[in-house]
Image 1 (cartoon, rainbow, N blue to C red):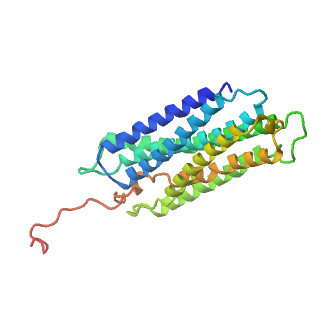
Image 2: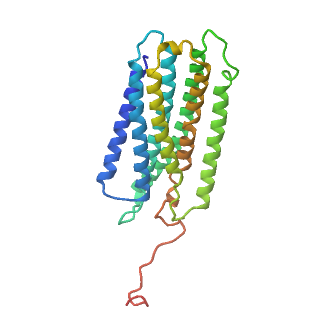
Image 3: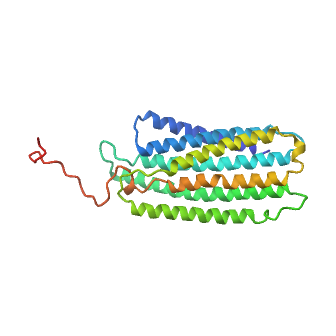
Length: 287
């Protein structure tokens, strides 16, 4: 209850920054595959964070006596939405920086372009670290939720190992995803094709989880307090399973669909392509 207002403000502030970035991209009046991908991520992040801010604000109004189990259930769902929104926002920032590496009417170069590429690579690596951190925080929240829900009664068989096993499995899945992405990037250096089929998956998963989570919190709030004393074992297991599993496809899709290195961006030539020579005015194509 004490942390809900701060989390609501955090989600609202992040949603405001996302909306400002969305407007900035639209005012540039330039279209490209990378800018389209950035807009898609910003839209998903804005929807998730706006609904999450509303979800945390609902928690602040749940002041009924004996509503501890209900509030913890709502808080765990809202925490999963905050994880998805945070990863989507940071991924959108990486795509935004990558879009500025695309060649415009005049090719970019010099130390400014190199600095932009270095910053984009740093932010891309930061996405990996933030994804790992959010998984750890979400597993900790689920661990605390299980111990609060089963306080004073016997905990189920899965309560003690669900958090460490979740970290191990999701960490391994993220490692494999990043490895496959880097391997595919090595194979497609200089490829002009835009392969971003993972972004629609991430967009649909993120928005679906935000809508489902908000609806679940609304249903949970409308139920009487007597139904949550104690919290039913089936409800606790479903809540933990949904919150820990539903964000995973979104995070993995965002990690796999991260923008490629500067040499592999759409519209750029391979590093060994050499300079492009101008056509001969007196050649066969002069006519």
